[in-house]
Amino acid sequence: MTKTRAATCTVVWAGTQAFWLIEAYKLEFLGQNVFVALWMRGLLYVIGNCWIIVQVMDAYEAKEADGSGINERSTTCVEKRSL
Image (cartoon, rainbow, N blue to C red; front, side, top):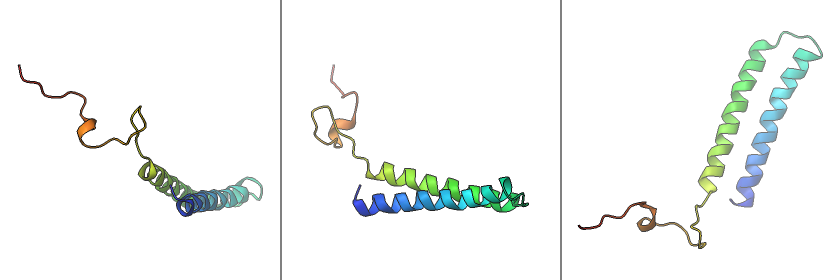
């Protein structure tokens, strides 16, 4: 994962956390009726976290035990053998 992508993921995570926490603060400490806004911020939070998971999975590179990358030939578990 590049530093730019990691920084973007961090900003998205912190931003969605902040948006959700602002509404939660209004509900818990100020007693305001913000249930719909909190629900919408919750959806934004889930979408942001799903995007981050996709970015991490996209940046992941599987390695074999010897340290070499996995290619198409080595991904099959069972090779066909003639009897």
